[in-house]
Length: 360
Image (cartoon, rainbow, N blue to C red; front, side):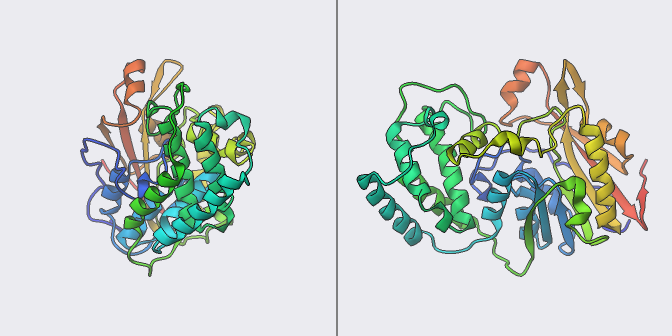
C-alpha cells in the first residue's frame, strides 16, 4: 500500500458536535462532524496536499492544516466560502477591533444611520436587535475574513435567541412570539473572543479556499498534484444548502439564494451524473498513488432507504467501504420521525500506479 499501512476507520463517538472549537463559528447545515474529520485526518501522514472538493464551512480543510498538511477547499456556495476562509485566514487580537466597530455602530444606532433590515428576515428578530445587526453590517466590508465569519455566526446565534432558543443549532423552526431582545453587540464580541482561541498555530502550511464547481475541478487544480481527497459530498436527497440560517443571511444581504442554489449539486435527478463527473475530475487531479475518502450515509427518499456506500460503489467500485451506526447528531429528531437508524459509510478509493487497489 502506498500511503498508509492499514485501512481508514470510523471510530465510535457519542456526539458528532463540537461547538467549543473553531467549527462552532457558524451552524452550517449538513457539515461533517469535526470530531470525525479530525479522527480520519489523524490517520494520514503529516505531509502532502489534501483536497476537499465540497468543503462547505471548511471543517476538513481546517483539520488538515492543523494536522500538518497543505489543503485546498472548493465550494460553489458563497456563504460556505466566507465561513471556510474565516476559519483558516486570520490571527489577531480582536477585542480592540470589535470594540472600535461596536462603538461606531452605537453612534450609528443613536443617529439612526443604518439600513432597515429587509421585510423577510426581520420577522425572525426583535426590532431593536435587528437595528443593532444592521449597524454592525455598516462595517462588514471593513472586516477581515475572520470577523466576517463572526458576524454571520453571530446573526445565526442571535436569531435563535430572539426565538427563545427554540430552534436547533442547525435548523430554523417557526417564529416564536413575542420576540426576545438579544444584544447583538454583545453576541458579536463574545463570538469573536470565543473562537479566536482556535486559530491555526502552524502558519507554514498552505491553505486555500476556492469558489468553484467541483464538476470542473481540473480547471482549478493542477493535474496529478493531490495526495489525498477527503470530503463529505452533498447529500443525494437534495438537501438545500441555502436554507435555514443561510436563508436569513442571504435575505439580510439582499442576495437571491435561488440563483446560488441553481449552481449547487442539489438535484436528486442529476445527482448520479454529477457525482460521476466529480469522480472523473478527481482522477485527473490526484497523483497515481493517492487516497480518496468519501464520508457518506443512508438517506430516505420516497420511503426508500438508500445506502450511501452502495450508491457510490455503483458509480466507481471502491477499494473498501466501512459502515457504522451513530447517534447524537442534530438530525436525530428526524430519525425518530422517519423511523430510521442513522448509518454512515466511509468509501475509500486507494490508487496505486493509477489503478484502484481492491481489498477483500
